[in-house]
Length: 248
Image (cartoon, rainbow, N blue to C red; front, side, top):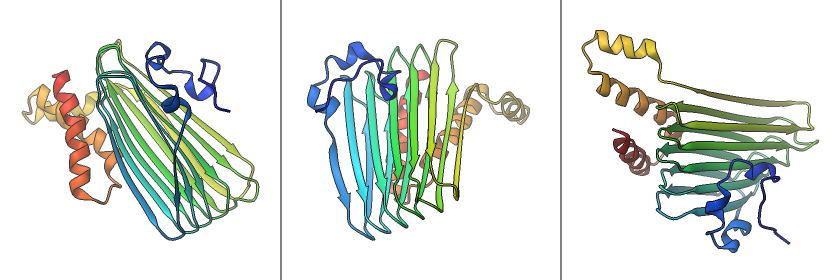
């Protein structure tokens, strides 16, 4: 029996609860469930860019040697959350790349739970957040490694860029590891644009606004680098850059 989340639920701690009240309960508590057969590949892209609060939840079970490759841009102009839970089989892989971008007073979220239930599976998650105004970009990423899931290799990387003082980014990497022969790497940093890079570009005669744009482009590109479909990569990148134009 699923219940509507409250602020006491760890994975909802940064959510916009006033906005959540307008989302149908079935969307908030239900899952879109997908089982990926052994050796198969699930490739999914998401663009959240709506004007009304939105919650999308995807629960994936990977068969042996299967892959889930999920990429997303969350540039919504109202509260938006994409939540993904993946359970991995031996030799399976989960790849997630996400961009959270926008201004206003909007909260944008990615939440992932990666369950390494079996040995020799791998996962990699790269999230980039760029916010301005009083907006907030949140990434909550939990990795569970079961006791017998040896040779797990799980990596998670979050970087947030705040273009204005009122903006915020929250990262909550969470690792629960019961196996001992594993590689788990996670990093989370939040800051401003690199002043040295700006100075270098200015010294080469590049106008400040152009320099800023180029630096943000490079920052965002990390999140979509692993997306093999070039046309789809470009489509997602265009959505992210369109949101950036609004900041200008």
